[in-house]
Image: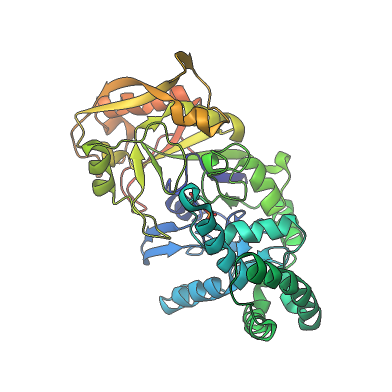
Length: 426
Ligand code: IMP
């Protein structure tokens, strides 16, 4: 059975939760491999509507759900999420947390807010979940990992040395009160006791699953254009949402991934600051936002909406190696008389077909559009590709051509059954 990565192909919020929930019905293991509780994966199935931030979207199936080493975990938020799921009758006993996953600590949350404030009009627009500071500490070798909670004495020793440093920054740079070692220690020991049964060495579990030839899903968070290397840096997140990030964040080697699915919305959205060449500031953008209820799952912020950017899509496909695309929210475009797809950019009087590294250049890029007729017919009840209006099929075919990969799945609504299987994923 295959290992399939399900990845955000744009700026996040593409609908990965729905796709993973659906594919997980057959899977034996689902691994979240990046980000933290900045993610908000919406799942609507027979159990109801759920907004998951850390728990993998496979939790409704029989699959083992693993939070990989590449995720940063706020234990308070994870416990809250598990409690909410249990209250609604969802079994979370199959949840496994990598002992190598780093923890979001109270100073990370504080520093995320303070750093954003100090950036003033250049703020990134982070989710303020402490994600950037937690990944900063991981790389600076100052992080505290889930496995550290299992040895309270060693944890206290480590926390003390890190907190001494953090309190110096908090008091001397930002002029705020220091944090209490005893308070954080006490709180995190409680979290540790609660989460201990789930914290495990996960590479062994994954190796055993691979030996059994289990069907494994790798669940991405955020999207390729928020990648710190290839996204619109510095307006990005802090961990890699790419297929390469899936290898690192789960502990799977590149040869073991069989399929890489890029999840694209049928248009583009972005939340937070940073360039977005096809952003619409008019009534069409507003209409898309309201029809699709484009407001952040984690922060509630209105999402910026725009036409499908095929330059960015081809770039995302190239750096991820997509074997197929999932196109979500096609039904959102049902009411529009005409559609536009960005096929190139005008930059300093020249036409370019690549996604520039420089945000100053990207901000200057004027989209070159190809116009296609709309279909102005409801599609949310359609379950077969051949039954879509001809204009909708043409639109999908054009997205496939320009992005360089075939469509496997099209979503025409939020629930599991509002799905068109174009080509089998496996
Ligand atoms: P951070 O990940 O909270 O540091 O935020 C950095 C940037 O990534 C901001 O522009 C956020 O809005 C964006 N971002 C982070 N997580 C998500 C997500 O799950 N969906 C969409 N945007 C996100």
